[in-house]
Amino acid sequence: MRSLPPPATIGILGGGQLARMMVVEARRIGYRTIVLDPGGADAPAAQISDDFVEAALDDGAAARRLAERCDVVTLDTEHIPADVLYELEDACAVRPGGRILALIQDRWEQRTFVARHDVPQPVHALVTSPETLASASAKTGFPCVLKTTRSGYDGKGQARAQDPEELARGWEDLGQPTAVLEEFVDFEREISVLLARGRDGECRFFPVAENVHVDHILHTTRVPARIDSAIESEARSLGSRVAAGLGYHGVMAIELFVTADGRLLLNEIAPRPHNSAHFTLGGCATSQFEQHLRAVCGQPLGDPSPLGACVMLNLLGDLWSEREPDWEAVFRHPLARLHLYGKVEPRPGRKMGHVLVVARDARRAEDEAESVARHLGVASPSTTHRPVTGPTPDPAFG
Ligand SMILES: Nc1ncnc2c1ncn2[C@@H]1O[C@H](COP(=O)(O)OP(=O)(O)OP(=O)(O)O)[C@@H](O)[C@H]1O
Ligand SMILES: [Mg+2]
Image (cartoon, rainbow, N blue to C red):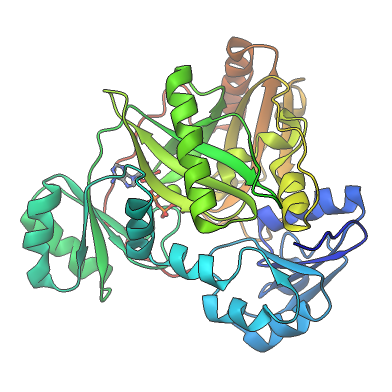
């Protein structure tokens, strides 16, 4: 793997918040960045990158023009067509490349890969027609969750079913040629393993994060996660097995369910920096974004140690329904840090920013986050409960 120290040029496909925070860190370190996004200059990352290309994420010719000006290309989203990535691989390094993306983009391929590496996961079955629903649900039982094979995010393209009738309706609503049916896991909590795998295959782990989703969208992340050290080390070992199995270089996450009897089941793999690791930017010695840049540029990895107890609250577009939220209320909280992504249009459910609280102990972080949430009108992080899954038949990327 070639070493690419600053001021190498890093191309980023997709210009959302993950790319934006990569650019923030790249600027500090002295890397140059070029971002490709259909939103052009308005895209969160393009607002602050050295340059940008305005093009659709599946525009192979535009991606090629970007790659020819870069030393390495990386991603803000896993929804870049794998074929586009294959086409770039002789122009510059592409991390992750088309092979990894092709595997991750297909939920069934991903589940098959996970099984091959002996990582435990929910019982699942492939559905290819209405006729195969019965045999699939005989395997998973009820309740179960039907997920489109491709293009899901923030729970879009999923339907929970209590019985065969609801499952048949969910299949129709999703309207896709194939889907994966999974047992509904009555988990005790959700956690994510956030790691970087570097040039010589060395893995460095951020603290395991505990996540609460509301309506399938990440609402709160807490660190340290409320799990014992045996579960934490098992979770890490699953993460490194997945990263090594993929031959991955960069920061990635695995999302896990923890069951009441202490089992860990892999929900999904994210081959990129992850929303549940936003706490690392301000809450760890090295952020996930800097760590990702180091890893994809073949540099030594940084120190992922936590600087305190963290609570991160996502800020969704719903908060803007009447007026701009009261940011002064956040600034009045000394332990809270505001992050806004510069998105022009605050749609409901759209991730617009987050607030991070870092404190000496978990109680203090919790109290401060609770107070910020109250002042902003965000649902309280302590009373949010587990997601209620209904049909969300909109798997389109946007
Ligand atoms: N089999 C399951 N059992 C119980 N809950 C589930 C199951 N699958 C998904 N969920 C719930 O829905 C959330 C979103 O699911 P998943 O991660 O599969 O969706 P996604 O659309 O890929 O989301 P994202 O990419 O934004 O994480 C999970 O974090 C979990 O809370
Ligand atoms: Mg997920």
